[in-house]
Image 1: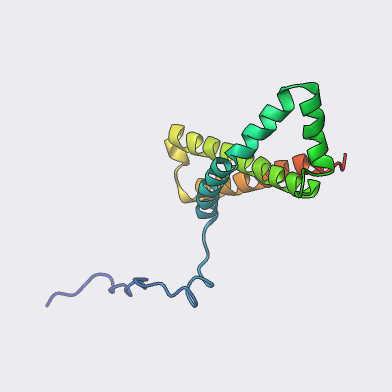
Image 2: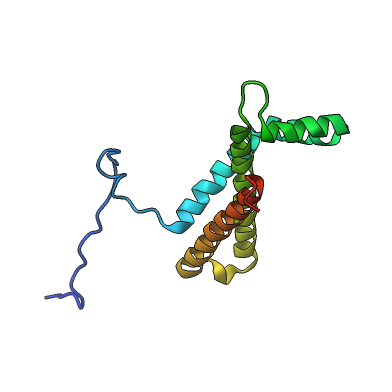
Length: 148
C-alpha cells in the first residue's frame, strides 16, 4: 500500500467566467494593480489632452497679449467654457503627469533592483506611488486654485 506523506490539498477556486454584477464588486485589486491601471489611464489622459497642452504652451509664450489671454482663461473662462472647468482640466493633467512620472520611476526602480520584485516591496512602492502622486496633485491643485 502506498500512502501519501502529506494529505492532499484542497483545490483552489477557479474563476473562469467572471460575472460583472456579482464578482467585480467583491474582487479586491492589490495596490500594484491599481497603480498599473492608473499608469495606463494617465498615459491615455495625457495623450487625449495633448491639444490642450499645445494650446497652453502656444498661448503662454507667443506674446504678452496672448499670455494675458491665457491667464484670463483660467480666471474668467474662455468663451462658453468657465474658468473653473479649465482649471479642473489642468488639474487632471497635473495628476496624469505626476502619476505617470512617479509610476515610471517605480518601474525603473523595479527593473534596476531585481530584488525589489516581490509582493512586499511591490505593495509598498505602489502605495508610495499613490500617496506621492495624490499629495503632489493636492499641493499643486491648491496653488492652481489660489489657496496659497
